[in-house]
Amino acid sequence: MRAVCWTGRNSVEVENVPDPQILNDRDAIVRVTSTAICGSDLHLYDGYVPTMKKGDILGHEFMGEVVEVGRGVSNLSAGDRVVVPFPIACGNCNACRAEWWSLCENSNPNAGLAEKLWGHSPCGIFGYSHLTGGYAGGQAEYVRVPFADVGPLKLENGIPDEQALFLSDILPTGYMGAELCDITQGDVVAVWGAGPVGQFAIASAFMLGAERVIAIDRFAERLRMAAEVSGAETLNYEEEDVPEALKELTGGRGPDAAIDAVGMEAHHASLPLHAYDRVKQAMRLESDRAHALREAIMSVKNGGIVSVVGVYGGLVDKFPMGAVVNRSLTIKAGQCHVHRYLRPLLERIENGEIDPSFVVTHRMALDDAPEGYELFKRKQDDCVKVVLSP
Amino acid sequence: MGTLRRAGWFGLGLGLAYAAGRALRRETKEEPMQVRAAVTVVEDTGTAYALWRDVTSFPRFMAHVESVEEREDGTTRWRVASPTGTVEWDAETVEDVPGERIAWRSLPGGDVETSGTVRFSPAPGGRGTEIRLELRYDAPAGSVGTLLAKLMGREPTQQAKDDLRRFKQILETGEIARSDAVPGGIDASRTLRQRPARPLEEAVR
Image (cartoon, rainbow over all chains, first blue to last red; front, side, top):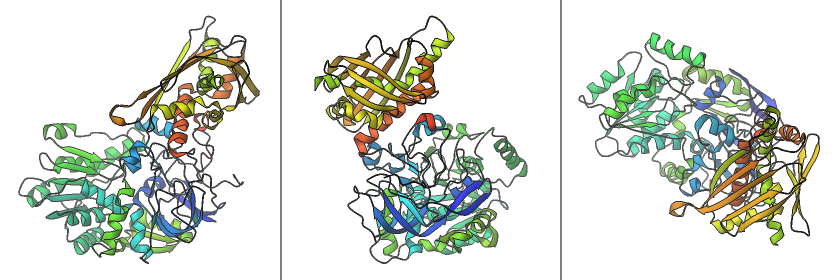
């Protein structure tokens, strides 16, 4: 089959690889009909996530048709149309039972490796480095799905691929980012990063009752999308001092909650400050550039919530802990517990409350993935989201 | 069946023998080597204990164990794969409290001198069972320590933890988590030489 393989920093190639096979009774094989490039794939592409190996198949946002199931999978059969959550979760352990799906205790065969970096291991993830298991990803014609009796959501009402695909990751991730904010009436939520996850965090914050949502980015087309689709107010951080502007917009209070939908490769409008983190990251003195997170912490109101759904891999530097303690802030974070949100969000899509396909700007064949990665990385041609069809 | 209880537990921490091998090379008078590992499973103490007591299940979750055989005298015979051939030894159970505790030790004359305990206790708040494993290695006989070092890799504690993780996977999910990079499941000795995350060429089953 054809598959998008990581071949080194800033390099992916579409290669011929063996078809996947059933390895365990609870596996299924899915023929991928749509898959997307995620912002977190760019962290792999850019070489900032350790434990990648040349030849790893990428991709954790995918959906398709079941072609084969193992003996332990009785809820799915060949021909079923499914969307697959990016966290691989067993459904049996204490974490899964408590609906902390991305913390599944059994799905990461490289748990020992993850423990060394993070203290304890999270779940396994498709196409997302060997730290999270070394599972082949879904930017391919076929993919093996472990614990297929637990994860995949069967689609039965003929919903188009582009509306269902983002249930695999970015729609629930954005939604969880907003949910973590414990939004109450009158709340103002600021969202750092108006990429695809940020767009869904903005839309979700409104769905959950936010009075106002302020989107922060530097790309005009993303800010325009946030304003036009969701009705967000916008701040371009290259043109404005964000904490000051937020004070102005909120009568001096600061936003009630702040969502970091940027993560480890943030940019800073101040060249010297950006250079400081960029150099330390390049020298591996810190692994993650946390401009957005720092700014979110400094900007949120006293007693506010900072919700982190942008991806961080390791260590950050110059973390404003004094602000967190002295201003009674709450930081919440997590890889999305996608399984929790699949059905409720599918209902919202089917009810017409949200049509997630609005983020798609580029549709390409799987074979054009290398071009898609470059477009997305460079934000060329107003690229916000790339969907690939195998 | 009582004989089955004997000694099986011992293989779990086999990897830790490496440390004993290192001690042997470093000094003439060795200190015993001790290793601990712990894991929590959702099942109750009786269920966890029962799986552990079944020595035929050991090769499924003990990475390097090829087979465990029960003898008529109640001891067990262990066969463990190594790059230079199979290592074998005998062991016996010295304590067996159903649902709570099993302790064992190797018999004189074997390739390895070791003892250990596995304990099962209820996790607070109905969270299942806490399993604690303690292994002790005295100086291994002859050059077997070196052999085991080759066999087990460099991280005896990691090996013990991984064996516990596989035990948990079998108990909770009924299978070993396998990925394309790690088709055999968790194995600390292979952490640094994994295949890429892409499907295998050969048929697996």
